Amino acid sequence: MPKKITQLALIFLLFSCSFILKAEPVGYELISPAQPTQNPDKVEVIEFFWYGCPHCYAFEPLIEKWSKTLPKNVEFIRQPAAFNELWSKHAKAYFTAEALGIVDKVHADLFDAIQNKKQSLDTEASLAAFFVAHGVTEAQFHEAYASFVVDAKMRQAPLMAAKYGITGVPAIIVNGKYKTNGTLAGSHEKMIEVMNMLIKQESTAKK
Image (cartoon, rainbow, N blue to C red; front, side):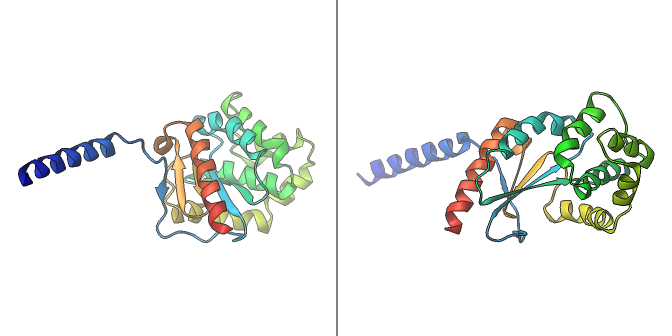
């Protein structure tokens, strides 16, 4: 009898291990240590991106649609990555748009200009022309481009990526605790699913 029990226990153990090996990946990684959020009363979601990244361009319509359906307790933050000189120039374009209050007006067009129209937009002059075409005066652009606010955000950009362990884009951070990307989740669509799951989990925890 004891021998039969041992055999059954072994079979059960092997079955359990097999199930674990075949289980679906969770789709995210824990950030250790967890990072503080800007507003502890809300669930913070940060998207790291680069205008020159085709994967970010493909992900943009999905996250744009997702951002329009967020509950009031979720704060969505776009964070351009600045891993080298070119990325930094594109990051500065985003921060300049933010300073001018026209992100919604130019964000998709910046992607389109770089990805489809093959415009480099890597100099102050080329960016000035782009912004002027979107209703900003040259004086307004140059003032924002050289502002203290934009400079401060540019200094913080590399540190932001480092503290979350970001090495590629697009990448998502949920509430300073979880990181997901296309590789971890399996696809851009799955990233949205993972984000929503983690938001729900964090929202419940805050109640």
